[in-house]
Length: 229
Ligand code: ADP
Ligand code: ADP
Image (cartoon, rainbow, N blue to C red):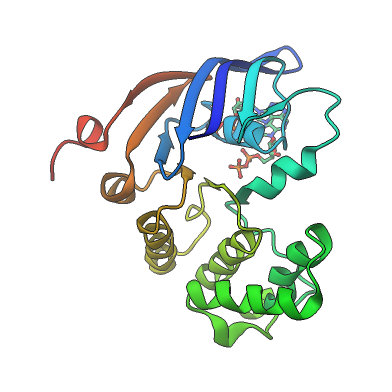
């Protein structure tokens, strides 16, 4: 079962070519790590997967739905594609609980009581149910990132995209976020992670993709890239 299928994808920002003929297939329960130097197009690629950016050439299909210009069902696609950013992007004026309830209620039309159950279930899963009534600014960076993960999970997406989720964290908070991501991977979540965390890649990735200058230049299992420990 293919969750993401990208074929010969190219993207330009104006005259600048950010992606060139990218091909990638992600199957159900596969864990992909994308690495490569800054500016190589990693973020652009995964942003194309949930239509935060639009590609100009090639094809991208998510769960069999083809992404194309003038599409009316972007929301349908985004429901299937959870995304966690470097900067947590939580709603600052909403409690942790409301941040998590918002998607199910407003996008999926789930009644409030049911949305609350879903939110608490996933806050439990990232092990911060006791923070539910706080506001994001009252939490540590690591806790905020785990809320961001829980918020995405509340939409029960088919795939989770992570865009350098630990890069903005203080060093002592990196491991709690990586542990959460690792436990998701162990539960069979389909994941595409842009990260420089090689220990995580080695422990979790089925496949590592190395990008440079907007192209996939190498692809293989983690041992091929990092050697056996
Ligand atoms: P990475 O995630 O690998 O650091 P990005 O996908 O963020 O790379 O960026 C790839 C290239 O595209 C970089 O040269 C970056 O400056 C450029 N870029 C990214 N976003 C934009 C944009 N909105 N407008 C113009 N150029 C952009
Ligand atoms: P991140 O590391 O979180 O991807 P960036 O600093 O690369 O953050 O990009 C932040 C925002 O700026 C993104 O929306 C990206 O598309 C945009 N951006 C990045 N590079 C450029 C660029 N050269 N010109 C215009 N916008 C850019």
